[in-house]
Structure formats: C-alpha cells, structure tokens
Image (spheres, helix red, strand yellow):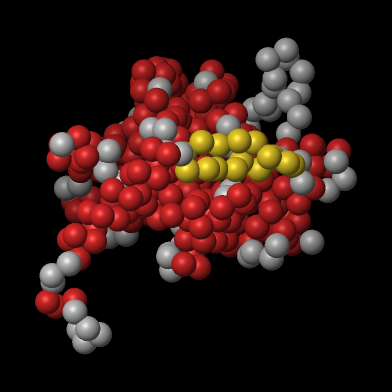
Length: 114
Length: 203
C-alpha cells in the first residue's frame, strides 16, 4: 500500500498547481492558475512550467482540460481550462492527510516562536 | 512602440522555433494576455525563454533517436568544415593567425544549425538543443585537452578567456542558422505566422 501510494505521490509543485486549479474553480486556465500560486502560495512560477506540470498530470488522469474561447488580447488563441478529476481530488486529500500526520506532534513547530 | 517591438520579436521567435507546433497555442495566448495587461517586456522574454526550454527538453525526451540523427547530420557539416579549415588555414590557432579560424568555425556551426533546422522542422527546438548540448560537450573536451597549451604561449594570458567567448558566439550561431530558413506548411505554401494572424485579426 505504501509503495502504491508513493508511486503516485505529488511533487511540491504538482500539489501547488492542483490546489490552484481548485481555488480558481471554473476559471482555471494558465494565467489564473499562475496568479493563484503567486497570491496564495507566495511563489512565482513560469507559465510554461505550469503547463508542463498540468500536461504531466493530465496524462496521469489527475486533471482534464477543455479548450475555451479565443479573445483579441490573446492573439486569437483559445484558453485551455483545467478541472481536477475525482482521482486528482483523492490524490490531494491523500497528500494532505500524509502531510498533516507528519506535522502532528512536532514540538518545535508548536506555537509561534522559532 | 517598444512594447510592440518586443511582442513582435517574441512572436517571431516562437514561430520560427516552432513552439506552437507542440500544442502551445493556449500558453502563448496566456503570455499575450498577461503582456497586454501590463507585464514588463523583461517578464515576456523570461517567460518565452522558459517556455522554449520547457518545450525543447520535453520534445527531446520524447524523440531521442531523432535528436541523435540530427547531431549526426550536423556532424557531416562540422567534420567537412574542419577539413576546409585545415586546408585553408593549417595550424593557425597556435600560430597567431586566428580570424580565419573563428570565421570558418562560426560559419560551419551556422550551416550545421541551418541544416538541422531544415531537416527537422517539426522538432526544431529539440534537435537544436541536442546539437547545442553536443557542441558544448565537444568544446569542453577540446579545451580540457588543450588547456596546458594556453599557458605555454608567451604574452597570451587572456587568450583562453577570449577563445571561450568566441566559442560561445560560434555555438550561438547554431541558433542563428536554424532560425534563418522560412517556415513552410505541408503543402509548400507559407504557413500563417502568429504575427500575420494578429495583423489579419486587427489586434
């Protein structure tokens, strides 16, 4: 079971991107996902990197994408919207549970003092 | 005006590099949207280079055999160039006369880049990346094996640094050569570039 879980583990960046897709909701496309990561995750990620991670996760069935509308500001190019699949959601929950259990009971991290 | 110049330059580069052949239309659209909303030109260039590198390495991983074939194709030109260089200017690197050496080296690598660009249109970035990686490795090996020569030449303390800079310029000429040929669609007619598309749509 442990081996099975680790084979599907999410990397740090994959977790950030999945959470950003969930936060962006219906409007989850490259720009909004990168903005969510910058705003909530306090991390700057290149758009190309975001798409590379999303492509990888789409191949693993964690997200699905659909092409949206093209606007003049985008030079006539379509937006690509992303949605987290059920499998992706299960993966996020599993990662959260694993991280929470690692977090628990560490004396140095209790309270605000370093 | 300057922003328009940067935008056109980036679109030209992405078009010539064939980035949009790899389902990158939406990400290029995102770049344009963000730039339109006020991001700096520095940001645009940084994102463009990061995107190009990401596409190149992803394509390279997926097409290793093709990349090896591209390097072999380029080697035909590079080895031919070495023979021409030896015939025209024998032993000139260590004999003081160096302009001809670097000129022929630069032209050879530019020609190699052009050939790879022409023969691998749909995987241009990946094959060029493979060629550049090969060139860097080969030149590093050459410098490592000839390192002691630089310290035996009297009065040429800066020679090594100068040669490394000239080598880097020669390696960059691979990209110059590869970006030169016009892109054509499958039926032989000129492909519509993103820039032309933008102009057509009046953006």
